[in-house]
Each structure stands twice: as structure tokens, then as C-alpha cells.
Length: 73
Image (cartoon, rainbow, N blue to C red):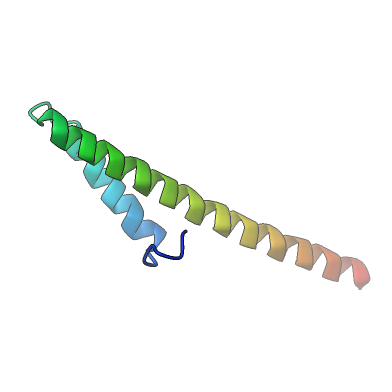
């Protein structure tokens, strides 16, 4: 996440992404609206990926710490 972007949970961002996808699936969208929604979807997709990557790093770090702790026992 960037510093200028407000903190947003994965669940909220993912729900918003799903909403954007549903709107994009509507064949009656004007081209300009579809482009705006696509851009918003790309932004939300990137945000979700960053949140997941951060969570994965945290879990990996915790797992490594547990492994090191168990090896010292």
C-alpha cells in the first residue's frame, strides 16, 4: 500500500473489486464508464495483491521464528 492510500482491509477491497467486475459484465455500459471501472478494478486488484503479499510475508516470518525457536529447544 502507498502512504497516500487510506488503510483498507482486504475484505473491503475485494468486495469492491467484485462489485466492479459485476458492473463490467453489464453489456450496457458506455465505453468511458467501462474504462473507468477497468482502471478502478486494476487499482483494487493491485491493492488486494499487496495486502495478500504482506500477509504472506508475516506468516512466513512467524513460521521461521517458530522453527528457529523449536530448533533451540
